[in-house]
Image (cartoon, rainbow, N blue to C red):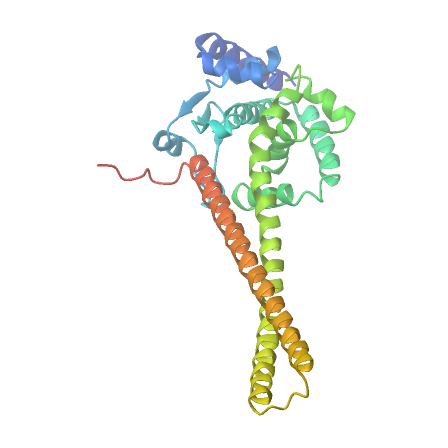
Length: 310
């Protein structure tokens, strides 16, 4: 017991020393405010000497486990490193990452009893989130790339991304946040952008598939009716040339019927052309979403090489 206390006291003394050695920039101080950290959260954040890093420096500090997932920040047990994403569309990503990594520092400092308590609360909460395919996919990624860190990652993810959680777990997170809803809002700011783009792309794909099917059906109808009309017009002209109509009235009636069918087919053709134009506009919109999504993904992926320049 005495040895445990000695280690804890040494850690606390070291933390205080590092805290007072750190001079936060305006940006780092803003992350504290934007995420609703309380004094303890700020203490752990500043004790970890957080820094914003460009891609090259960030990759030297934070191991890229796989290219399948962008790494936004890391805590190496001493320092916090945050990838400096400057895309204004993703303004919430840096403060969210700051809070996420602060919670890693917090988890590392939990006593054995507190860790057991927190792990149980996290596992209980995770059972209510099993239908969240994105979360379960991320946890599978962490299991493959960071075995043994499952609850540590859950601790940071749930704390910064999940709004509605059990009261006991919410009370626990109040150790580090005076208003946890602020970091949830920061996360939602950029996460909703990706969600909206994905949902719009899915909706467009469904529209495009349905419209393509409708166009093909109309084209088949047009082809069949046009072929029939062509044959009927040829037969009508042959009868007229051979004087087979008994009266002008009979001739006029049959001619008007053919003209009506021709007009109907022309309307169908015009409609098909309109559908094709609309189809092309949907494809163009879908391609635009793909470009925007790729651009956003590139802006958060530090592993990509910078674009060549003259």
